[in-house]
Length: 69
Length: 149
Image 1: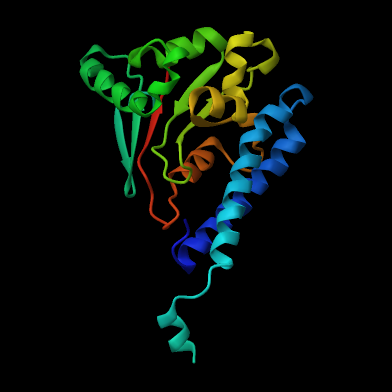
Image 2 (image 1 turned 90 degrees about the horizontal axis):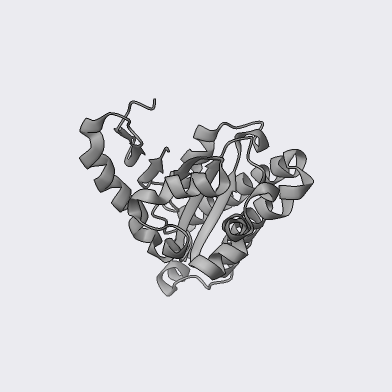
């Protein structure tokens, strides 16, 4: 679970990193291996995107809301 | 680089296992046990702690290194397989191909397995690839264990 904005940033960077790898794999993998080699990166991206969304959709803690008022 | 038995970088720990000199035997054996501890569920594939790489090599003929971060990024254990560019998945024995399909490996062995070969990553080297797996969500680095057959 992502705990704060710093972890959110790192997770988003990790997603971008994995996507760059996937783009390279797509360009360079042989047809016989592409599906298998890409499968892990795809699932990892999906896992992390779900965590990002979970964090972004979580309401702010009450004390943080008070600071913003 | 193969002569390095233990190497520490930044805040993480990088263990290079596979030293050929006998005096490292005890250390290697100890570290190999550390490597394999999180992957005991793979025991149906790997016959024992000290045979992870020899088995992997004999099964696929092309495993060049195995990196095993103790991961907290995913809920289960993570294993990263770096294959050499001569690796041909379609030439693997059918019983070992499941290792290279993430969902199959997850279901069969309970481990998240990612694999790559250097030729697939044109813009980044294997070192950069490995560095990625050291990075924790809080920005710090975890120790990784690299085993070289």
